[in-house]
Image (cartoon, rainbow, N blue to C red; front, side, top):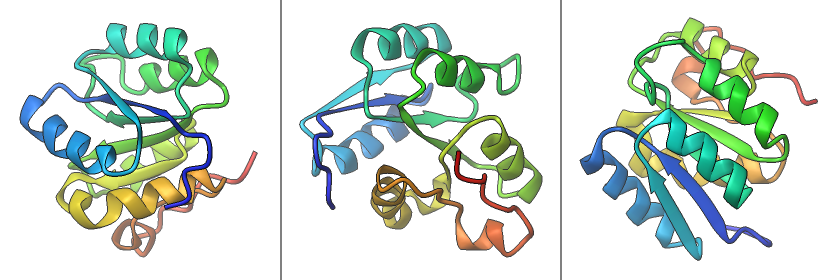
Length: 143
């Protein structure tokens, strides 16, 4: 993995067990992984830390849909954002990408796809799992 100057990754998920597993994967590559469990902590931590990467569970909040994603993008325009989800519908992926995410990963594939997805988004490209892309979810166009 070519991490360049990446030192801090912000990891946001309400499910502690899953979060620990994802953190373990990310710690093999990055110096620091900061974990949060709610939208308010995500947005405040992002503002303070200005991380290079945020890995966020789609359901970090139980309401307001993708508002958290738009707010995160507004507060930290340079952050690369990977969204984790259990939903493999192409419409979900498309909505996430249109809201400003750089990548979309299915939770069931974290062990095999997380680190390649991190490499992809840090290199400036967008990441969509093959199974979702084949179902018709186009990646978000480069800005």
